[in-house]
Amino acid sequence: MVTPALLSKDELPPQELPALVADLLIKKGWMLATAESCTGGMIAAACTDLAGSSAWFERGFVAYSNEAKTDLLGVPAALIAAHGAVSEPVARAMAEGAVARSRAQAAVAVTGIAGPTGGSPEKPVGTVWFGWRVGAATHAQVQGFAGDRAAVRQATVRHALARLAELLRSA
Image (cartoon, rainbow, N blue to C red; front, side, top):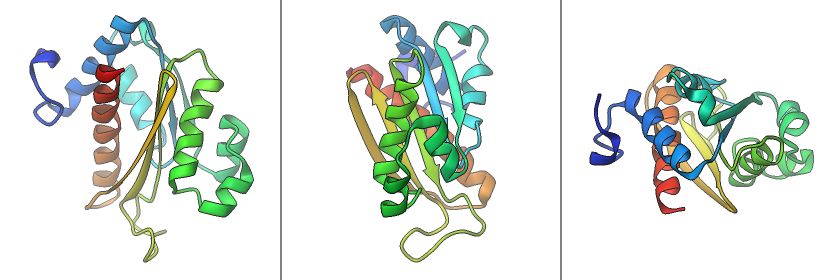
């Protein structure tokens, strides 16, 4: 196994990212929650594929529809109506809702357009908004990924976990 602390996030094989996140969470005594739309639970699956994940993974929310984002995570329907489901405010609200509705101290949220349909000139296929809640701070970022649906979803999982590790290191 690769020693995660010795490599940067860009050098880590994708399968090593959950181990790095796990190590950082365990050192803090924190738990993680996920709030996923376009990945449909793939981030939670990547985390729970790691043996012993119950020590640091608290729960995952798959909030694929706008109604699920509101019902499960408390994202205001008016926020979705004003900005669209794939937006910075919604990604932030999803991450904050995941922490608020769990016993976790950290969360990652993703909402995007994996394709092959659903894109627009303003939000093309491959657009993904990320939200991270780490302790008392919420962070957000947008990324544009190329490729088919599977490639966009895999890139989303990798980026979500890699940036989470960066934020946990600096928290």
